[in-house]
Length: 295
Image (cartoon, rainbow, N blue to C red; front, side):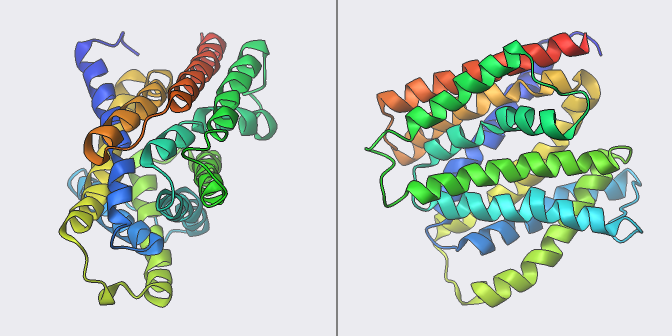
């Protein structure tokens, strides 16, 4: 991989900004839509740019091939479950909290990678990073201004959503030889198939008369953070590699906190800032160890 230049870092920053923008838009979407409907609309609109890319690049979609069960399973764990859980949780907590809680995915991935992969074992640096990062999350849960007995479970649900992303990523290793665009398009198709009956039975979204801001947010969530962002991710991974791409983890909670304050005027407490710093420091040490192991 070539040394990243200014354009590469600009794409990485842009990707972090897009993914961070998802959190306050999910909050706005919950004003009109239920969590299952939000998940469905995200997957539906997110599939459009990805499938169009596959069509124009003549990439075969293997959603219904003999390995369909892997695409269906990953679609459920990596899309359906986290999209639902995050939307459910954000309805009761500030979106900046969700951004910080979701940024724990590199830490959770390190823990699960130790037990379920051969080459991702703990070392002293990783262990230190995990302890620092999750100490920040524990400290965040002590912020009684933002997390209390009424939304404590909602915050835990968001953490569960973050864990689903990690588990889905580990399952993706089973089909790692396939093109990213094919895998993404296939799991999006299965996400739609799974969510259509769920949304129809549980929430009956055709009865909803949404607010304009909620409708704009849910369409944006699908096309930009779910669909378009994946295309940027492909570019970064192909040109700069996985280690460079993981640096986006630093940007998401920072941008998420800033954007939620700008657009929703959400409260930013001292404990949020301390937790944010702890999580970023934890991610730094985990990534530092991963980089050493690769070189």
